[in-house]
Length: 193
Image (cartoon, rainbow, N blue to C red; front, top):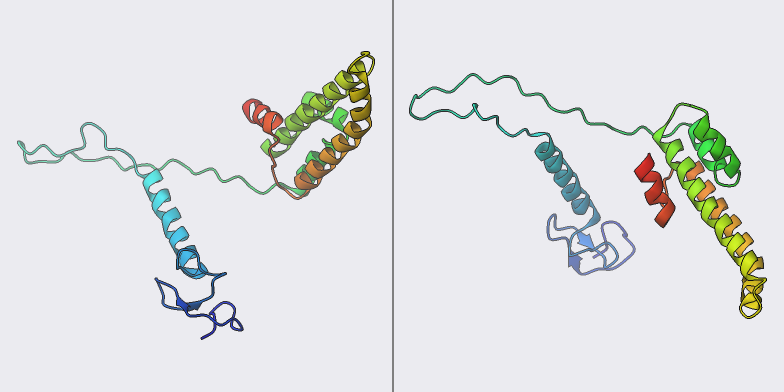
């Protein structure tokens, strides 16, 4: 027997849901990737249906003593907000915020489209670069202290390239339309977004 998804691999295992032959790589809990996807889709549909259901209003239940049910008003479903994919301009602005962080300060003052994607990256870049600048200044000051200065002087040349590599990584992720979260700066950006 060969795997349904990898025909060249021999297998002796079958999916518990559909019965297809699957290899060890495809099996997760004895279920093939197709059945796992089907379960995930059904679970998402159930969650969406539960989320859009509305609790009954106090006067909507039928009164057994009177034998009549009050006329119910048509139910309204709250609109679902779907975040659109960021445009090329938004991704470029978000990517430029990391290496050119003074641009982030300018973008806070100038009202652009106020896209949540761009605003998140502007705030996060200010947090990341503010932290990097504070660490650089701290190590530069500690380099002048007699006893512990040699440790700071040793770490200082490595701090700036690491800071720039971090900015470059975040800029590349932002240019790809992703929203990576840096632990403290990302939380701060989410709070003020």
